[in-house]
Length: 313
Image (tube, rainbow, N blue to C red; front, side, top):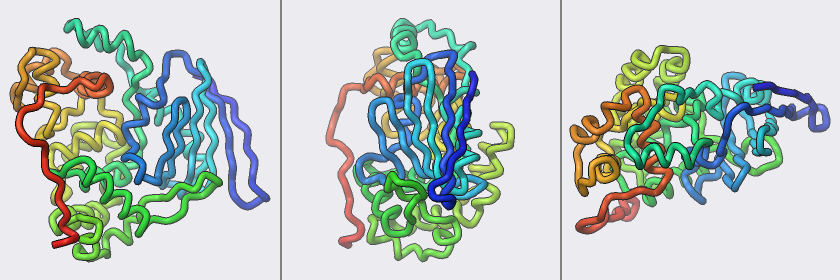
């Protein structure tokens, strides 16, 4: 990997930086970073084929970055106080530190998916609260409901991101920490999840420290946040810490997907999922990412989870 950087400013006020990263292995931007996007109501990101734009809060300040894939290179632009941080950490974000050298899938389906999607990497955003916020909102509720709630929360309490792309930043931790639980009812977020958001925000400095910790210690630190369980901690570790072995216990779909894909069993539980994933220890999160990216799903039985509207109650 090589980088070439150019530094500019917009009228001498807003930092605007550019770099080109020369890639030495495949990268599919959409497969790698598209998982961070929470749908059309999520104004923290813009996603299109070959281009990802995201607003983020870095240790150096807020920033907007635009990543464009050009075959064997990646163009990165960044605006704002955190622009330099984004430029320096772009290789980490896109999974340059992610190694699949030890991943040798024996199952025919996994081997075929691995061959077909060589550009799928495990990202590492290094923005832990940013990853945790939408995941807390997704706890135990249907996806459309959670995505709508997250979009409303960011629109109401977030702020405009730097740069010309019109994106929004997630709310600052201090604001989330002091927001009463009942103020989130209008977004469809009940007291339990609202208080978990507040707890994560209060502990945001401790949470962000997990970026520099060994993964085992980082997971334990995440689990110490009141209201954060194994599912949320694993999902955060996957995207914020680049944990290729993250397995989300308690997930509504993944045990069935893994059981169906790897054993032909239409239903499975966490224990069965772990049994089937054991040969891939160290890369278990990558296995799940491949299956989900391929759109593999177990046969459906019974009704889907019903959407709720607590704001109307």
